Amino acid sequence: MLDVVVVGRVRDGGVRRSGAKPGDDLWVSGAGGGAAAAVAAWSRGREPAPEARARFAAPPDRTGLGRSLAAKRLASAMIDISDGLVLDSRRLATASGVAVRIRPDRVPVNVAAGGDLNQALEGGEDYELMFTAHPKGKERILALGRELSVQLTRIGTVGQGADVALEDGEGHHVRPGRGGYDHFMDPSGNPR
View 1 (cartoon, rainbow, N blue to C red):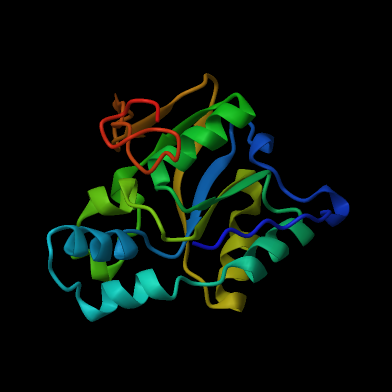
View 2 (tube, helix red, strand yellow):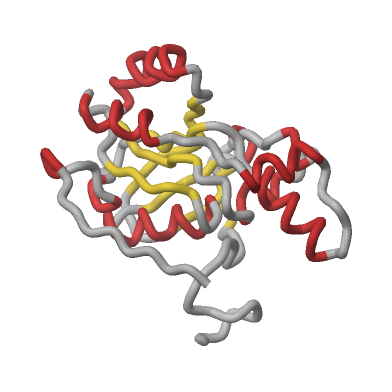
Protein backbone atom coordinates (compact mmCIF):
# COMPACT_ATOMS: atom_id res chain seq x y z
CA MET A 1 0.00 0.00 0.00
CA LEU A 2 1.23 3.45 -0.88
CA ASP A 3 -0.28 6.69 0.37
CA VAL A 4 0.84 10.04 -1.01
CA VAL A 5 0.04 13.48 0.39
CA VAL A 6 0.89 16.65 -1.48
CA VAL A 7 0.87 20.07 0.13
CA GLY A 8 1.13 23.24 -1.86
CA ARG A 9 -0.38 26.57 -2.80
CA VAL A 10 -2.50 27.58 -5.74
CA ARG A 11 -1.50 30.77 -7.49
CA ASP A 12 -4.24 33.28 -8.27
CA GLY A 13 -6.80 31.43 -6.14
CA GLY A 14 -7.49 28.70 -8.71
CA VAL A 15 -10.96 27.46 -9.60
CA ARG A 16 -12.86 25.79 -6.79
CA ARG A 17 -15.96 23.62 -6.66
CA SER A 18 -17.81 26.44 -4.98
CA GLY A 19 -17.99 29.01 -7.80
CA ALA A 20 -20.93 27.73 -9.88
CA LYS A 21 -23.77 30.22 -10.33
CA PRO A 22 -27.38 29.84 -11.52
CA GLY A 23 -27.42 30.43 -15.26
CA ASP A 24 -24.02 28.79 -15.85
CA ASP A 25 -23.60 25.96 -18.33
CA LEU A 26 -22.26 22.56 -17.22
CA TRP A 27 -19.39 21.14 -19.31
CA VAL A 28 -17.36 17.95 -19.34
CA SER A 29 -14.12 16.98 -21.05
CA GLY A 30 -13.65 13.74 -22.96
CA ALA A 31 -16.09 10.86 -22.65
CA GLY A 32 -16.93 8.79 -19.58
CA GLY A 33 -17.49 5.16 -18.71
CA GLY A 34 -14.40 3.56 -20.22
CA ALA A 35 -12.62 2.91 -16.93
CA ALA A 36 -15.90 1.73 -15.34
CA ALA A 37 -16.26 -0.83 -18.15
CA ALA A 38 -12.87 -2.28 -17.18
CA VAL A 39 -13.80 -2.43 -13.49
CA ALA A 40 -17.16 -4.06 -14.33
CA ALA A 41 -15.40 -6.74 -16.41
CA TRP A 42 -12.87 -7.49 -13.66
CA SER A 43 -15.71 -7.65 -11.09
CA ARG A 44 -17.34 -10.39 -13.19
CA GLY A 45 -14.05 -12.29 -13.43
CA ARG A 46 -13.52 -11.36 -17.07
CA GLU A 47 -10.74 -9.64 -18.94
CA PRO A 48 -11.84 -6.16 -20.07
CA ALA A 49 -11.70 -5.04 -23.68
CA PRO A 50 -8.29 -3.56 -24.53
CA GLU A 51 -9.80 -0.05 -24.92
CA ALA A 52 -11.40 -0.25 -21.45
CA ARG A 53 -8.23 -1.58 -19.83
CA ALA A 54 -6.18 1.20 -21.45
CA ARG A 55 -8.68 3.84 -20.25
CA PHE A 56 -8.38 2.51 -16.68
CA ALA A 57 -4.59 2.06 -16.71
CA ALA A 58 -3.74 5.37 -18.39
CA PRO A 59 -6.39 8.04 -17.79
CA PRO A 60 -5.96 11.29 -19.73
CA ASP A 61 -3.95 14.13 -18.24
CA ARG A 62 -6.32 17.11 -18.11
CA THR A 63 -4.07 19.41 -16.08
CA GLY A 64 -3.33 21.57 -19.14
CA LEU A 65 -7.04 22.01 -19.76
CA GLY A 66 -7.67 22.90 -16.13
CA ARG A 67 -4.86 25.45 -16.11
CA SER A 68 -6.08 27.01 -19.35
CA LEU A 69 -9.68 27.25 -18.14
CA ALA A 70 -8.44 28.96 -14.99
CA ALA A 71 -5.93 31.28 -16.73
CA LYS A 72 -8.52 32.40 -19.29
CA ARG A 73 -11.12 32.80 -16.52
CA LEU A 74 -13.58 30.62 -18.39
CA ALA A 75 -14.58 28.23 -15.58
CA SER A 76 -16.56 29.41 -12.56
CA ALA A 77 -16.28 26.04 -10.78
CA MET A 78 -14.40 22.84 -11.58
CA ILE A 79 -13.99 19.27 -10.30
CA ASP A 80 -12.38 16.12 -11.68
CA ILE A 81 -14.67 13.19 -12.34
CA SER A 82 -12.88 10.51 -10.39
CA ASP A 83 -15.82 9.11 -8.43
CA GLY A 84 -18.53 9.33 -11.10
CA LEU A 85 -20.28 12.15 -12.95
CA VAL A 86 -23.45 12.06 -10.80
CA LEU A 87 -21.64 11.92 -7.45
CA ASP A 88 -19.11 14.59 -8.41
CA SER A 89 -21.99 16.76 -9.72
CA ARG A 90 -23.52 16.51 -6.24
CA ARG A 91 -20.24 17.62 -4.70
CA LEU A 92 -20.05 20.63 -7.00
CA ALA A 93 -23.74 21.47 -6.38
CA THR A 94 -23.31 21.21 -2.61
CA ALA A 95 -20.13 23.31 -2.53
CA SER A 96 -21.71 26.01 -4.73
CA GLY A 97 -25.21 25.90 -3.21
CA VAL A 98 -26.82 25.38 -6.62
CA ALA A 99 -28.88 22.84 -8.55
CA VAL A 100 -27.21 20.94 -11.37
CA ARG A 101 -29.29 19.72 -14.32
CA ILE A 102 -27.62 17.04 -16.47
CA ARG A 103 -28.92 16.20 -19.93
CA PRO A 104 -28.16 12.45 -20.30
CA ASP A 105 -28.64 12.68 -24.07
CA ARG A 106 -25.64 15.04 -24.20
CA VAL A 107 -23.29 13.04 -21.94
CA PRO A 108 -20.48 11.62 -24.11
CA VAL A 109 -19.97 7.88 -23.56
CA ASN A 110 -16.52 6.42 -24.16
CA VAL A 111 -16.46 3.79 -26.91
CA ALA A 112 -14.93 1.35 -24.39
CA ALA A 113 -18.18 1.54 -22.36
CA GLY A 114 -20.08 0.00 -25.27
CA GLY A 115 -22.74 2.71 -25.25
CA ASP A 116 -23.60 2.14 -21.55
CA LEU A 117 -24.75 5.59 -20.39
CA ASN A 118 -25.00 4.35 -16.79
CA GLN A 119 -21.25 3.68 -16.74
CA ALA A 120 -20.65 7.24 -17.97
CA LEU A 121 -22.98 8.67 -15.30
CA GLU A 122 -22.00 6.52 -12.31
CA GLY A 123 -18.66 4.93 -13.13
CA GLY A 124 -15.50 6.43 -11.73
CA GLU A 125 -11.80 6.56 -12.52
CA ASP A 126 -12.30 8.60 -15.70
CA TYR A 127 -10.38 11.65 -14.41
CA GLU A 128 -12.05 13.96 -16.87
CA LEU A 129 -12.92 17.52 -15.84
CA MET A 130 -16.41 18.84 -15.19
CA PHE A 131 -16.75 22.60 -15.03
CA THR A 132 -19.31 25.36 -15.08
CA ALA A 133 -19.06 28.49 -17.18
CA HIS A 134 -21.09 31.52 -18.17
CA PRO A 135 -22.98 30.86 -21.44
CA LYS A 136 -21.16 33.77 -23.13
CA GLY A 137 -17.94 31.76 -22.94
CA LYS A 138 -19.21 28.91 -25.15
CA GLU A 139 -17.25 29.79 -28.31
CA ARG A 140 -14.04 30.44 -26.37
CA ILE A 141 -14.44 27.09 -24.58
CA LEU A 142 -14.98 25.22 -27.85
CA ALA A 143 -11.95 26.99 -29.35
CA LEU A 144 -9.85 25.96 -26.34
CA GLY A 145 -10.96 22.36 -26.84
CA ARG A 146 -9.87 22.47 -30.47
CA GLU A 147 -6.55 24.10 -29.50
CA LEU A 148 -5.81 21.39 -26.92
CA SER A 149 -7.39 18.54 -28.95
CA VAL A 150 -9.80 17.80 -26.09
CA GLN A 151 -13.48 17.05 -26.63
CA LEU A 152 -15.52 19.55 -24.58
CA THR A 153 -19.28 19.02 -24.34
CA ARG A 154 -21.99 21.14 -22.72
CA ILE A 155 -24.04 18.56 -20.81
CA GLY A 156 -26.36 20.69 -18.70
CA THR A 157 -27.07 23.80 -16.74
CA VAL A 158 -26.88 25.25 -13.26
CA GLY A 159 -29.96 26.64 -11.54
CA GLN A 160 -31.43 27.70 -8.21
CA GLY A 161 -31.66 25.02 -5.52
CA ALA A 162 -29.29 22.45 -4.12
CA ASP A 163 -29.70 19.15 -5.92
CA VAL A 164 -28.79 17.15 -9.01
CA ALA A 165 -31.32 15.99 -11.57
CA LEU A 166 -31.30 14.33 -14.94
CA GLU A 167 -33.29 16.44 -17.39
CA ASP A 168 -34.82 15.45 -20.70
CA GLY A 169 -35.23 17.69 -23.74
CA GLU A 170 -38.68 18.80 -22.53
CA GLY A 171 -37.48 19.92 -19.10
CA HIS A 172 -38.75 16.92 -17.09
CA HIS A 173 -36.49 16.06 -14.14
CA VAL A 174 -35.60 12.69 -12.65
CA ARG A 175 -33.45 12.31 -9.55
CA PRO A 176 -30.49 10.05 -10.29
CA GLY A 177 -29.49 7.21 -7.99
CA ARG A 178 -26.69 7.55 -5.46
CA GLY A 179 -24.22 6.74 -8.24
CA GLY A 180 -20.46 6.79 -8.12
CA TYR A 181 -17.94 5.85 -5.45
CA ASP A 182 -18.06 7.40 -2.00
CA HIS A 183 -15.00 6.61 0.11
CA PHE A 184 -17.01 6.90 3.31
CA MET A 185 -19.87 4.56 2.32
CA ASP A 186 -19.93 0.80 1.81
CA PRO A 187 -21.41 -0.64 -1.42
CA SER A 188 -24.91 -0.76 0.10
CA GLY A 189 -24.83 2.96 0.97
CA ASN A 190 -24.13 2.68 4.70
CA PRO A 191 -21.39 4.68 6.43
CA ARG A 192 -18.13 2.75 6.82
